[in-house]
Image 1 (cartoon, rainbow, N blue to C red):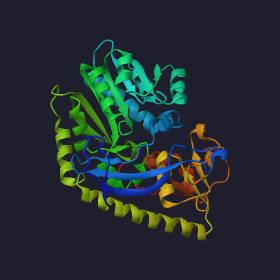
Image 2: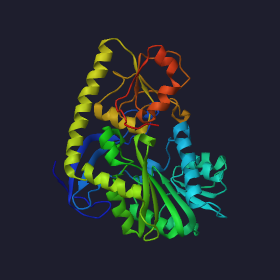
Image 3: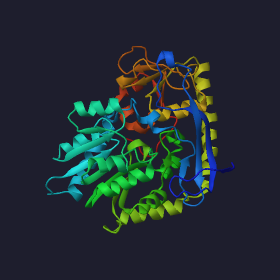
Image 4: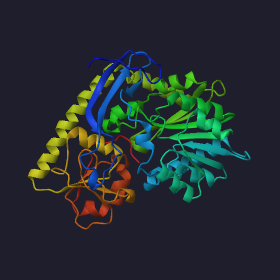
Length: 406
């Protein structure tokens, strides 16, 4: 698809090639008021591949102040995510911090404090660093000390202390100041400390055909190979990892200062499995793009058939990734009447680009014939919570069918 003239976010190479083009799209977390409809800016949404370090990344950056200065995403909205965070906190405490006094954790992109609440319950001194003012305020009101700032090396020096644990859940692929953040972690992590990184795994994204996890907030799409290349540049090293079902398949990676710990057997096995899969080769991206184009044809056929049969379709959930899918497919109110959402911060808003109005779960009476499930990564939770509707004949259609699900 042609060479790009842009420096790789990880290794600074200029040997980049366009592999996935999802067109011009609005920033997907920019849910609109009625007055803003049609005024939202659009930006290129393209994935490029680095021939030198094999990192997949966006070639266009929407400024972090636009995307993360204020937003409406809340990590406490779903039970699956909160219970995942609780289990992880207990795991980290049991394995690495058992019996230690004065334990401390810094959470990068701490959102509403859901992850830190679970560490606080285990006796940790907690600090969140959250760029969204609204979300940071929610955390502070819930008793979670939260600094409203972007985390980077300068922020870490301003904090001026070291921590036993660093956490970055679903934020490490967002980072515009990637190398400054890594240096901040390196400087702020105690000698025997552990950094837990949670990130969408590109190998699983490809296996799930989950192209909707490509959006402007996600600047990088890591494999083990590519994230380990980044960490080594900053004197950090992954020593353990596993694949968790959260978000359709995320790596939970455990990182220490370089040379401090031996790699686990399961990490060695995951590296070997990744190597065998071929997911770090450019051919894997070309194949993925062909499957994305076929998904568009199949989904539009399904929605048009539903319309011709006189069926009413609502979107289930209004996750940010759903807007990538809706905009790439070109699906608006002609095919999906409403998006139904739990998060009350999104009441009376509209989806960016496609302008579908949002309804809040439990605040409307008439059910559709079909729920087109955009929050597909919570498939098990959604089906369990809506058995009464399933029994009444409401269809739940999953445009993306994850191999593992929360």
